[in-house]
Length: 314
Ligand SMILES: [Zn+2]
Image (cartoon, rainbow, N blue to C red; front, side, top):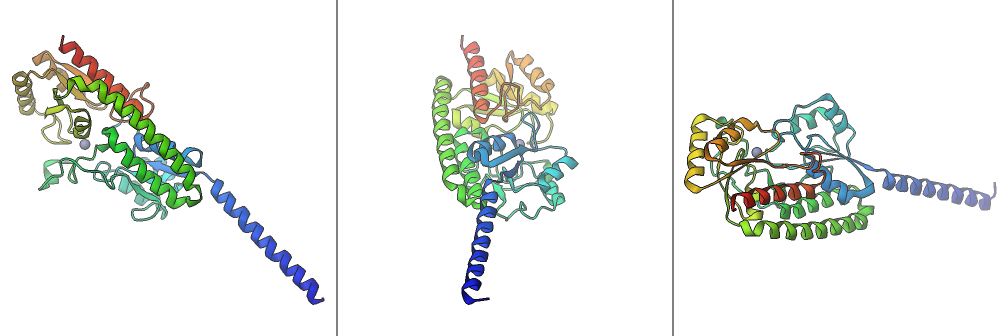
């Protein structure tokens, strides 16, 4: 063979290799990222930032207590196929998420890898304890982990998810950035609406079942004066309920807020004693049929609270 023919063959080979490389690259850019989240709120936000580049599922449902989720083999299977795992971090899901991750044996999504996204990075935490004893049943040892209930912190959650997506699919950065911008703008508009509705009731005192509302309280200017649970994760006790009844009577408090997964007995008992009302709020997207999105969580809660406050102020 002449040198000329050899050069042509080599060139053809190089072109073929380049083409194959390009095809593989475009295939991987087109492949949807499999994302698994601990909570539906994280799923919601990841879907909005990831758009058509992601397929997102949540392990916990919106009406489940995020502290206590029963691990199932199907969860392990889903984590085994995941490219990314998104968690609230802190100790919210420590009882079930780390064992599930370990069982999945998926090296792409373990803590410390680019596929592991902790949305608590940069969150200004509330109620960080100065001393900690899990023996007393405390399940908020790193600070209160229910931070997604302050919608202004939705921006930080979204930023963390954006950063994670860009690490895995840098080619789609501009697309994720555009989605992030839309999410942030929509969230800001909604926050102004919610805060305007709640403004007349700033400083109103209420009580709650579980200590999961400090961020919500901060965002909307409420004052939570006590909890039916003596400690986060410890069921209401007669002595604690007596204390709460006292507080409500003394401070003229008429509203108790709780979650769909908490038992209403204790709350109803206390409300009955003081002539107050019990509001079952949405703690996550999917808490109720009409609460589909992260934005719906606040639409639902703000409307319910405002209606209850209007009733008592007349
Ligand atoms: Zn909690």
